[in-house]
Amino acid sequence: MNEETRKKLRGVSTATLATALFKRGYRTQMIQDVLPLSPRQESMVGPAFTLRYIPAREDLNRLEVFRDPKHPQRAAVEQCPPGAVMVMDSRKSARAASAGGILVTRLMARGVEGVVTDGGFRDSAEIATLAIAAYHQRPSAPTNLTLNHAIDINVPIGCGDAPVFPGDVIVGDNDGVIVIPAELADEIATEAVEMTAYEDFVTERVRGGQPITGLYPATDPANLDAFAVWRKAKGR
Image 1: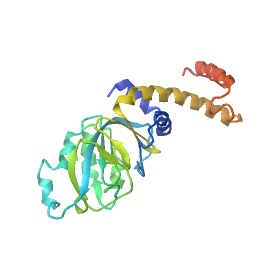
Image 2: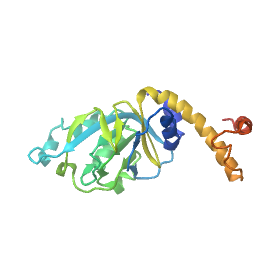
Image 3: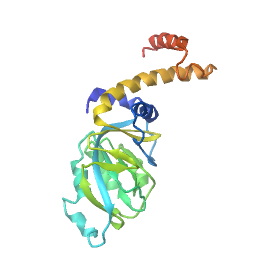
Image 4: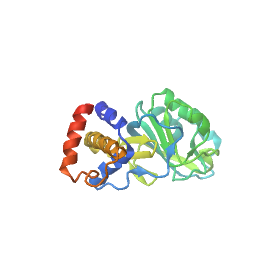
């Protein structure tokens, strides 16, 4: 992805991005019911690399399948590009783990930006200490083989009710994870930076006692004039 776009997106919130997407008619881009295992100091940003699970079938999901280097879960961990975010469709179920500490550590060692599942991780306390962004629904001890069958790599998926296409830009902060269609990423990032500057101005004014009427949204031109002065003073 465009590295300038990545830099811009690191400094904006998923809330701001959700509003920018809503302006364009996108309503379902937020991945539902996932949160970071540890607090984020800056946003996770990267293109999506996907893994899809389907319901397990007992005769196909034995521990021996992990001996096959082409097993989709194992292969995905080795194929996910550095700087990308692995996004897993785990059928919104945390009854079985999507992955565990060893696989997430391998992703970290390979330079992957982050990992997201609408299911759960085993070894969640360990994963929370790693230098990789990780988002899930809740901890889950059972192996994925008990209920999930890894079937496809880098195909369109649904994750937490959000559509995710390979290459879409994934952004995660402390509120959750949002999906930006790849073709919109550059313009959304630029707009979100502008929105964030105004929101910071508004926050400062509200903390100082100003009412939100005419300020948020900016229906009073005087507030836009004040924002221009503020922005120049702040170098924003």
